[in-house]
Every structure is written in C-alpha cells, then in structure tokens.
Image 1 (tube, rainbow, N blue to C red):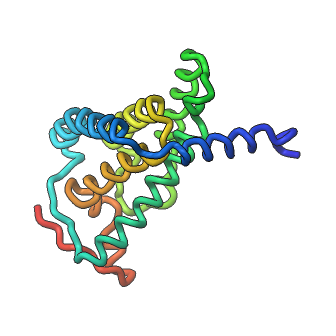
Image 2: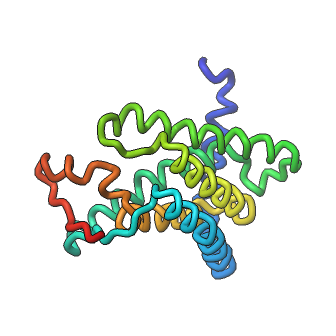
Length: 198
C-alpha cells in the first residue's frame, strides 16, 4: 500500500473532519476581520504602488456575479485551504510543539507559493495572469501567512476559506484580477465578461 498502514490518510481525514467541525464564532469572525485589515494595510499599498493591483470595477450582472463568486468560493478558496492549511498543518487540537508547527507552516507556505507558479505555467498559460509574477507571489505569500496564523488560532476551515474568498473576490472584481485571469478569453468562449472601469 502506498501509504503503509494508512496513517497518512487517517491523519488527513481526521484533520479535515476537525477543521470542518470547528464552526465559526464571533471571536473567530473578529480574528478574521483583523487578519483582513492587517493584510489590506500591507497588500493594498504595495500592490498599487508596484502596479500589480489596478483599481477597476469588473462587476457583472447579479446572476453572473453570484455564480462566479460561488465558483471562486469552491476553487480556489475551499480547495486551496483544505490542502494548504488543513491537510498540511496540524490542527490545533493535535497540540503539536511550536517548533514542529513552525516547520509545517514553512512547508505549507512554500508549497502554496510554488502551486501558484505551477498554475501560471499550466492552467493560465498564455493568459498573462501574472501568478508567477514576483509581485503576485509576495501578495500571495502575505495572504498565506495571514491564513496560517488564523488557522493556528482557530482551527476552523470555514474561517480561512471565508478570508481567502473575500481577498480573491476583491482582487478579481476590484483590483485587476478579472483582466489578468483572462476575462476576455472567457468572453470569447461564450461567458459574459463584465464591464471593466478603470
């Protein structure tokens, strides 16, 4: 068997179950809000000054916006958080020593950044998405640090998914993400592209 006695699969399943079962509470919501504010205070000035983030309004009609937002909640937010936070990081209930948690946090962050480089070279190849751009990687790395911290404090999959999703939506619809991820290419394939105001 690839995983020996199945320990890795059992551990991943246990982590997913515990993270899913850790529901959102008001204190967690405040932690998430603080994480968003902290990230925004650093990412927005850096992203705008470097030219990677560009102010825009790419809001489509309500139906298109709702469907696209739901899709982005599933991927990238839910999928990436399940993999890069929940599966790779010990759940707080595991009571892992701090040095081991720091090691796994570093691994998680590095793999998270490498994943975005791989996405840029495969799924978004030719779309000029910029996911391998050092400016994007710095922003993604900062978000990864915030999400690691929130997961360490809460152990909640829901919290990190929500924060990740809100950041993705802000980028897609307010700061140039729609154009970078190939909004025009989507329109050519029959999907309605929203108007972009610069």
